[in-house]
Amino acid sequence: MHNFHPDFLGEAARRIALKTYPRARQFVVQHLYPDTLRLLLLLHEHVPIHCIIGIGYSGNDDVVSELKAAGIRVVTPSFADIHTTVESELARSLAHCEEQQLELVIHEVGGYAIKALHEKFEASIPTVLGAIEVTKQGVWVAEALPILKIPQLNCAQTRLKEIEGKMVGEAVVAALDNILRELGYAMVGRPAAVAGYGWVGKGTVHSLAKRGMHVTVMDTDVIKLVDAAVDGYAIAQNPKDIGTPHIIIGATGHQSIHADIIDSLPNRSFIVSGASKNHETDLVHLESITLNKYSIHPHVDAHEVKGNKTLFLVNKGYPVNFTGSSVPDEIVEFLFCELIMLVRELLDQRPAPGIYPLKNDLEEVAAQIWLDLR
Ligand SMILES: NC(=O)c1ccc[n+]([C@@H]2O[C@H](COP(=O)([O-])OP(=O)(O)OC[C@H]3O[C@@H](n4cnc5c(N)ncnc54)[C@H](O)[C@@H]3O)[C@@H](O)[C@H]2O)c1
Image (tube, rainbow, N blue to C red; front, side):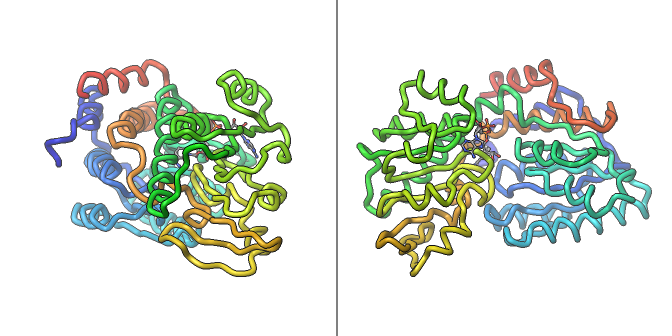
């Protein structure tokens, strides 16, 4: 397997001459997949990792053992406990760095640690050199802080990330299709609705259409609705215009499958998330109207709700593509090449507090490495 996979990440580190930084430590909140394992082991040689918090719902035992074998502390809280675990582990890493006079670098997916740092550990902010962030969700968290007191460098809004969005949409639909096939259910010819026509939503819509679904698009941004209309899809400016979708997917990064939408869904529709957490669906409302609940598949719960209908919630409202293989590693790895470049930018440039997307010329290096090695 090792020989099978091109060494995109090692090549990225070599091409930018990534140094070792013995006076810095990483605090990591990441998914634990084979691709992240390669990234973490490589980065650990340059900036030693003090602690990794595995995002629970995608934990992988082999990955955890290999990280531990490399001498790295790994914690895998359930998704419900992630915030408290980030807080307690961050406290530990900050104390260690303060004691040893080291600098801490946050490396994360989703803005958990940057939020905890600002809200709970203000006095320790000078110990933190900055944060590196992979997702828009994490950038939105930094933007929402009253005052951002560290630099956050991100590869969340790059052109390569937009390209990855198409593949995330495909991964969302492929994962859902697998589950539906296991249930003996065909997507083809059925109506579907997708909330969000951004990078992930667009990929999701195209992939549903490729499987023969008739898709209606919802978005709070009218320009995105124009884009969807010009791409040939039905649009809904108002929840009542979504019709009777047999499948509804939220890919907005916010709550999009609101109570009124849930109430209007037809009997036997599937409720699905293509985002990053369990926020797309108003789960509180769904629970409040649920009279009886049972599992029909390891990743699908049937909710018998008021009004004599049954709604099927996929993966308890978490992203459906977190149930199995998602975006192919070689796609994710062009983003990880970008992340490696952010590490060098943060440690060598030491920027002032603020939000910094990866520079275009560095993104081109990542793209070139990918083309050269593929
Ligand atoms: N499942 C995965 O593997 C995976 C991978 C990458 C990103 N994501 C997540 O997917 C989500 C979307 O990412 P993106 O890059 O497509 O973002 P984006 O900003 O490109 O798109 C979001 C779209 O949703 C629209 N929107 C916002 N709130 C809405 C609402 N309430 N109703 C309808 N539309 C609404 C916005 O106008 C925008 O067009 C984020 O949460 C991101 O973290 C998931």
